[in-house]
Amino acid sequence: RSHILRRLLSQGFYEPQLVQLFLSHLTPDRDVVDVGANVGFFSVLAAKRLTTGRVLAAEPTTAAFSRLSQNVTINDVETKVILYNGLVSNETSLATLDIVPGREEYSSMGGIVHPSVVGQAVQTETVQARPLDSLVAENGLRPAVIKVDVEGAEGMVFEGAQQTLRDYRPVVLSEFSRPLLARNGSSPEAINALFDRCGYDVHNPFDRSASAGAIDFDEIIAIPRPA
Image (cartoon, rainbow, N blue to C red; front, top):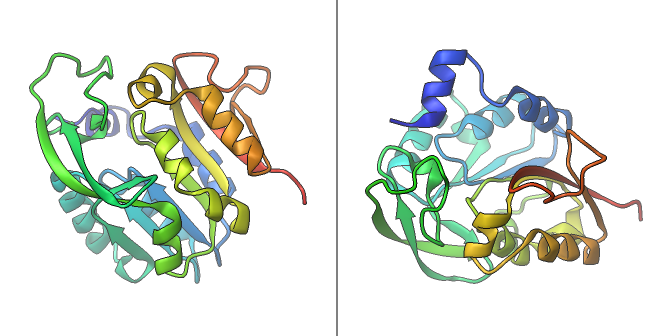
C-alpha cells in the first residue's frame, strides 16, 4: 500500500535528485541523522557509504520501524545504524501520532493533511518524543548531515536541535510544507528565522532563485555560514 514502495517498484528509483544531493554532503568519518527514516531508504544508503561514521535512524511508527529494523539487518549495516523508535521533537514527552496503516510515510502529529491520503482511515499511536540534541549527546554523534521528513513537525525538530546545529554545523536537508507546518503551529518563516539565528543560509536546493517555502510542498537545504 505504500506510495514510496509503489514508486520504487514502478520506476526503479526514488527521488534521484535528492539522493544525489544527500550523498554529495556525506562525510565518511562523520555521522548522519535521518529523522522520519520510514523503512530506511536513506539510512541504509548512508550507512553503506560511511567508514567510521554512524547513522541515527529515527522512526516513530511501529510498522515502519519494524521494516526499518529488518532492512538494516538485511543490508548488514547493524553496526553503523542506531535505531530510535520515537519522535524527534522539542521536548521529552509522550505524543500522539496519526497514522494511515500501510502508508506510514504520511504519519503526522497534526492530523493527516497530506493530499495523497486525506479522508483515509486513520489510527493513532502514543509514542516517545525526545529532542535531537539529547539523542546526539547520548550517542556521542558528530553529524555532518541531517535529513528531516516529518510531515509538518519540522519546526519542533529544529527547535530541539539548535545546540547540535551550533556545535557541529551539519548540512540540513528537509521537506518544507506550509500547510503541514501550519497544522503544527509553525511556518517556513519561523524555521528560516531559527536557522538564521544558528548561522545558516536556507534555500531551495534545486532552484536557488526561489525563496525557501515559496510553494506549499517544497524541499530546503540549510548550509552553515562560514565562521
